[in-house]
Amino acid sequence: MFDHQFIEVEVKEKIAHIRLNRPKVLNALNRKMIHEIVHTMEAMDRDDNVKVILLYGNGKAFAAGADIGEMAEDTAVNLEVLNQFADWDRLAQVKKPIIGAVHGFALGGGFELALVCDLLFAAEDVKFGFPEINLAVMPGAGGTQRLTKLMGKTKALEWLWSGEMMSAQEALQYRIINHTFPKEIVIDETIKYARKLAEMPSLSVRFIKEAVYKAVDYSLYEGMQYERKNFSLLFATEDQKEGMKAFLEKRRPNFKGQ
Ligand code: CAA
Image (cartoon, rainbow, N blue to C red; front, side, top):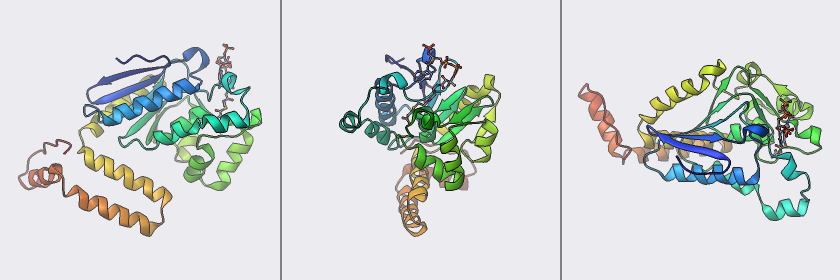
């Protein structure tokens, strides 16, 4: 177990568990907490013992947004100088799979943090939303961009302008989350999936992630060029040789992540 002020971190069976841990304020994200999350994600990304990163919240919520108390007296100049969202950009650079297990509330910055995850497994009670408009601000950590890429401009504007909360069913319909589960089992189900993913050849997992994100940002042609390079590159790995040999020898492959 690693020591942090606002998160708990534990590595078990190739899976890193990062738990947001400010339950009294529904895991409201202050800057130090974001810093801890980013640092930990990067450390886990470099750690050979970790194959998958899980992110979830202690207490009643995943995260009810950025810490409003910390932000209330901010000025435009000090936000610009702080450049706090640079930390969020680093989260998107993590190469290993990040799976979020969300429950309770995922609002504002909490929703943005969920949207940084590659997959989202959600408790049936979860409420997503961007209530920033009620505070006379707007999302600043990717919310307008990632939500729009997932659900399209028309629906994204409707949600962002209303500030209302979206149910798990709605989030499923808009392809924001992968699955819903009863609250009591959502973490266990997420771990179950993570265990399977942790056994996959890790360079394939990594290159597939990279290529899929290119599909979000690149044209089809550019994305296909990128995919092709990653495809070829995998033929430089021991796992590719082992995977194909094992198939031909009718046995289970023994992947090493190399
Ligand atoms: N920042 C700071 N404190 C927060 C918080 C936040 N985002 N969300 C909740 N809390 C605190 C509450 O102030 C309360 O503290 P006290 O016990 O000291 O009063 C505690 O957490 C529990 O919250 P509530 O009593 O309000 O719980 P509830 O169940 O009645 O309501 C809620 C839950 C609807 C989520 C409500 O807490 C709420 O509306 N929270 C704010 C949500 C929000 O506006 N988030 C967006 C923030 S802006 C942002 O995120 C910007 C960005 O893009 C980076």
